[in-house]
Each structure stands twice: as C-alpha cells, then as structure tokens.
Length: 295
Image (cartoon, rainbow, N blue to C red; front, side, top):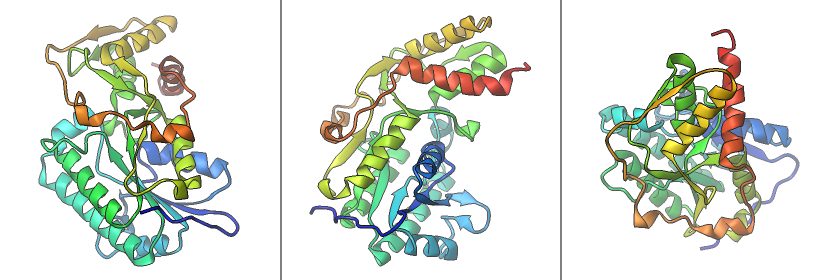
C-alpha cells in the first residue's frame, strides 16, 4: 500500500520521539534550523516524558497535535551498552512498552510516521534485533515507513551509550589508549549525523513516493574497517601532539556480516550522503576536543 500524501498548512509540526538520543538530538537541531515546528519527547526524561508509562498524557497530547512523527525512541546504545544490557528484563520490557505506547496512539490518530529500525532486525539471536523487528511489524501494519540506519556517528550526549567513533575518541583523550572489543578486521558502513538528518528530512518530504514495504536503508554505501577507524583517530591525536596507542582484541566480530543486510539503494534516487568518513571523524574530533582542552 502506498503511504499517504502529507499536506500541511503553515509550519510542519514535527514530533521527534527520542529527541535527546544519538540521532534524535541531531535531528532536533537540524529541523529547528530549517524552521520546522519541532516537538521534542524522550523515551525516559522525568515523570512526564516517560514512554514506558502507560498511559502517558503528555505523549498522548504530543502525538495528537503533530503533523508528522519520527519514531527514534529506543533503549539502545553502542556495542558496549548492548553487550551489557540487551539480554536483561529491563531492556526488553522498556522497549516493548515504548513501542506499545507510541504505536497505539499513532494508530488512534492515523499519523504519518517513520520508524527507526536497524540492519540488525533480521538477527534473531540479538534481543535488540528482535525488538526492532517487532517495531517493523507494527509499522507495516500501520502503513508507516521503515528506515534502517547503518552506524550513524556524531557528537553524543550520553557517553555511557557511546558508539564506536565517539568511544574511541573519548578513550584517546582520557587514557591515551584505544582498546578495542575486536581485532578490528570487521567492516562497517558509517554515516555522518548531518547526512542522516538530511536523509530523514527527504523521507518526510517525499513520504508519498515510498511504500510501507520499502526498507529505506540510510547509509553511506562505503565500508571501512574498525581498525582503520582507530588509525584515523590516532592520526588526529598525532596532529594535536598527543600519542595514542591502539590495542586490538583477539576476537573477531561477524555480527553485521549477514547476507540479509545488503543495503537497499532505493532512497538514493532522492538523497546521497555528502560527508566522507575522514572528514566526518575530523569534525567529531574537533567538537569533542573542546571538552578536553585543559587536560
């Protein structure tokens, strides 16, 4: 079924569920700069902004009053966070309640929306992947659109949930050692946060041309090994007169080497990323360096 055409009068009232998360924070800033009427709502941020709370009056009001919804909210983080928490009751329960709460209201008010999934949604051995797959099934039943992010990177507010690039930079500044979870031989496709925001805006603007059966893979299309990521960051430290060593682990990681995870190039007819990996890492490094200038 073709997703419905979205028409607006005046400013588009865009609700971002998960507005302080890794992608949500960047998208909030990006859309505000584009003069959208942005409504912010977090998965868990105080008594009123708690998407695990059913019912939630504030969530109800925000969804009812929105023109378009980006469903980015999820209890998730980088590899360290997932390894530690994804098999716990709280992780599974929180994400189940977040989805049930939001999707029930989206269905009630028939709102156009995008659900943020992952390339891991086909991996039944990963609780995170299973949760994302459930979200995709909800989305298809409501004729929403599914986007799958591939390793988005940029400044992060919550470093406990840091992803690989910000994690490596943080370790370099704080310990002088980039210790890795694997040997670094695995390859990933990385996407700079601002490019991701442009892609999401494009999906919103072109909502009617996509279908609920399309998996829109938002990715760079260019892979880089984790070890090369570490070396790029190491070279940036060297340019700043800091010596940083790289300590790979012995284990390998084949999590994302799954034949079912080939990126669908469909969205590339409307959008293409602009930032290469070296330039993107340098931008993140310079921003993070400001927090460590006196160290």
